[in-house]
Length: 159
View 1 (spheres, rainbow, N blue to C red):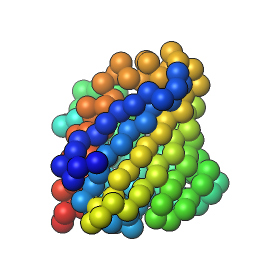
View 2: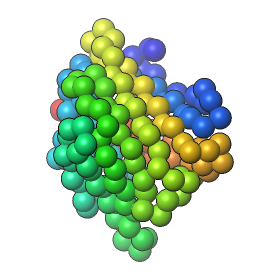
View 3: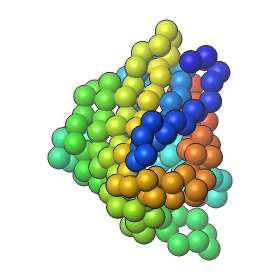
View 4: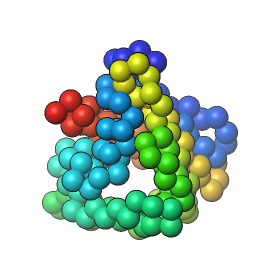
């Protein structure tokens, strides 16, 4: 991947999505940004106007997490899950479920961080319960919200 590349999205199977993006920071820093509540609240907020009002992370296999986003005039959006595997600073596997369950049930998310010169390539794989769930998630516009968050993460990592 080029250093200035934006996120790519692939559909390797009928029930999965793979997001790939490069960050200009080493894997330990990117890992911390993905797992530290104070940092998550700065970048994982999606479109403008949203804020992460709850960010709880028990970072260990079997540990739980909980996120809630809020925007004035819009119902809160929450999700939570369980960490399956934590291999600092290379890999995180977790299961997640949105409160409104718009993804068609629990998903399994694998985040892999690979050193790439002076940066990190993130490969995030989401496994859905069905093709319909995967397609429904894509139809929400989630990729644009993810890229907005990752652009904010670039700023956090540069600071």
